[in-house]
Image (cartoon, rainbow, N blue to C red; front, side, top):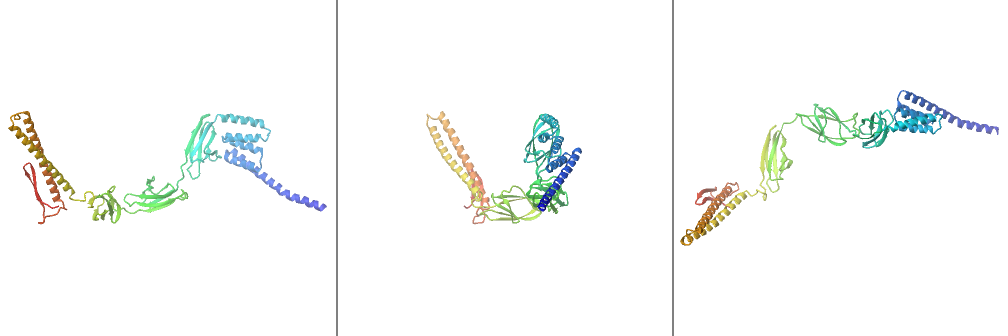
Length: 451
């Protein structure tokens, strides 16, 4: 029986002793943290002091730690947090409750005079610090803070975004709304060139400065263009992401080559839509938006359109000079495809005028007959009717002369155009000809031609 009791006592002691040892160890660690916190507090390192006191209280909870934490918040001008910790301390029933209650009332009175600042950010979720990042953050946007009436520095931080700082001058009981934009941290592109001093563009936007340079550019696939006067432009395609930081940028090293002399070629092509090729490469369709920039030397120009014979010629490009050339393809059925069309129209117009002139001549002869009949009639002769008939004869005769003369001239012009056309057929003797000569009442054209 005695041996059993001894065994039980020994077992209890073996179970309790480690717990007592662990409790002593926790107490010592909490005490060490408390001493560290007090040292930080005296030195004005309030962020470190708050961390030490909170860790000590987590290891070994004690009302004194709550009081110490409240004092730190008060020193950091975080009165809402200080009041909350003093209230927790008062809930433990301390001996100095009256003194602490008076302190809380004083803090609440001060807080009532402070400004109310509503903070937001784009994008939201930014962490907010007041005065210094060495102090604990006050929350994340959107958040409303009570801050003292003074000049206060606010700091915003968000992962993968540039930090932002703002200084605001606050008045007692003022309500302020402050919104900030958090610029994203862009991947960093590092460009070096040989020779240096080149301009760099990303996606068509020029970067500030010249090579060598480091610059933040949007993430993703980007076209990088490097230019330097007297050297050939260089294009590279790169893919940038968050891993390309200022410490480890995307490095692009470009060896520039001397520029090749160039000139411009202006090509005027008919019909619209014809394909234009230079040295076998399609450069566009007619009409081109502007001159073509080509290397100095000979180049083959080719023009093609459906239904037309292709055209080809060699053009010489001189450095710094502009060369012009014109190409007109003969496309059947297209406007201008019939080379005799204009001459046919002109001859037809002249013929119509001649016909009109003939009709006017017939009317003039009829009016003249009426005028002669009036002269033989004693009742009509030397009257106003005779005068009117005479005027009618003159006007109709004049119209006939004009229409016949103009019609003859227009028809003759159409014949000339036809005969001068390269596509006009030749006569059996191997030539064509036409002669235009004056005739009574107009012009007369004589010639040989075929349709």
